[in-house]
Image 1 (tube, each protein chain N blue to C red):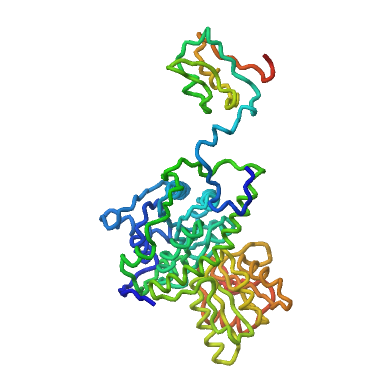
Image 2: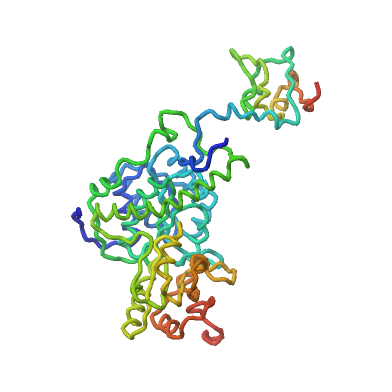
Amino acid sequence: MAARWQALERGPVIPGGSSVAYRTGDWRQERPVLDLERCVHCLFCWLYCPDSAVLVRDGRVVGIDYDHCKGCGICAAVCPPKAGAIHMVPEGEP
Amino acid sequence: MKTVATRRVALTGNEAVALAWKQIRPHVVAAYPITPATQIVERFSQYVADGEVDTEFIPVESEHSALSACVGAAAAGARVLTATASQGLALMHEILYVASGLRLPIVMNVGTRALSAPINIHGDHSDVMGSRDAGWVQMFARTVQEAYDRTILAVRVAERARLPVMVCLDGFTLTHSLEPVEVYPDEAVQAFLGEGPRDGSSLLGEEPITVGPLALPDSYMEFRRALAEAHARALRILEEETEAFHVHFGRDLPALLEPFGMEDAEESVVILGAYADVVEEAVRRWRERGRRLGMVRLVVFRPFPAEELRRVLARTSEVVVLERADTLSGLGGPLAVEVRAALYDLAERPRLTDAIFGLGGRELRDAELDAFLEAGPRGRVVYLGLKEAGDVPEPA
C-alpha cells in the first residue's frame, strides 16, 4: 500500500476480504502434490488446512490453491496412510 | 452558558468513576478488578446486576483478556470502558499498543499504583509511566470531582481523536478517599455524549472491513506517523472538548495544565495528580512569606503539552519537578526528563531540579516539602522523603 500518512485518519482499517488478494504462496519451501487417482475425498486435508488452500467442489477435493498454500505440509500429514494421496515435494522440482 | 442541576453526594474516587460509567451507559465493559481500582468494577457490576444499566459486562480471567475484549468490542463499534492498576496495567501492556494502533476510542480508568517488586499496593505513578509510549492519551485527576468529570469528558475526547484515553486517579489518595462530588443528572451526561462511536465503518457496519491488517516495512512507518499526528491533534481536541464540557455542565476544568500563582513566579513547581493540593498549600504559605513561588499542575502527560508548558515556565529561573516515578537513568523521573526536554529549546533555560517522592504510597508531609523548598533548588535529582542511614533505628 502506498497511502500518504496524512490520509491514514482511521489507522489500519481497509476493505474486507483483502487477504484473498495477498498471495502467500511464494513463502513456500515445499509444495503439496495431490494424486486425485488415490484421493478418497475424506476432506481431512480441507479441514486441517490453515490457509483454506484445499479446493473442494461438491464435497470432492479438486486441487490445491497454490497462490495461498504456504507449504506447511499438514495436508500430507493428515492424509490417511492407506490413501497416501498427498506428497510434499521441494518447490521447484516437478 | 447552560448549567445543569447537580446533586451533591459524598463519593470515593472509585465510586465516582463507577457512577460516571453508569451514566455513560457503555455498550461493553470488560474488566478485571485490581487494587486500588477494584471497587470501580465491583460497584459497576452491581449496577449491571441490578439492571440499572444494560451494559454487556464481561468478567474476564486477566487484564490481558479484559483489554483484548475491549479492543474487539470497540472495533465492532461499541462504546467501551475498563479500569485497572499497577500489575494489571502491566499485563495489558501488549494490548495497549493494539488499542492505540487500531485507533480505538477505549476509555480506561487507572488507579495509579507502584509496581512489584517488592510488592506494594499503594499509590505512585510508576504503572502509568510504564505505558507512556503506548499511544494512549493520559489525563490525571487532582480530585474525586475531577476523576468523575474527566471520565465523562474522556469519552468524547477518545471518540473524536480516535485514540484510547486513560483517566488516572492517584491510588488510595483519590480512589479511596471520600469527597463531596457534584453529580450531574443521567440525561445531561447522555445528552453530552450522544449515541456513541458506531459510524458505519466498524466491524458491524454495512461494508465488510479488515481491522488491523499486516503492515510490513512498506507501510508500518506511515501508520506510526499518522498516530503521532493524532496525538498532536489531540491537544486541540482536549481544549475544545473541555470547553464543550464547560458549556454543557457549567464546570470549568483546566484542559492541559493548571497554573497557580504563576503570574509573577520566579520559581515554579511542576506536578501531576492529587498531590497538587499539598503543593498548592505550600505555594500559598511561601507566597505569604514573600517568596515568588508558583505551581503548574499538568493535566495531560500524553500528549505532552510542551509548548504550553514552555510558555508558562519561560519566565521562571528555577523549576522543581515533583513526581512519583523514576526512570532509574540517573537523569530523573519521566516527568522531569520531558519537562527538561521541553525547556531545552528556550534561549534562557531555567535550572531544573527533580524531586522524586511518594513512591509506593509514602506520604509527602508539609514539613518535608517546606524543608525541601527552604533549602532551595539543587539542579539535580533528589529523592524527597527518603530515609537515610541513621534515620531508621537499626533492627534489634
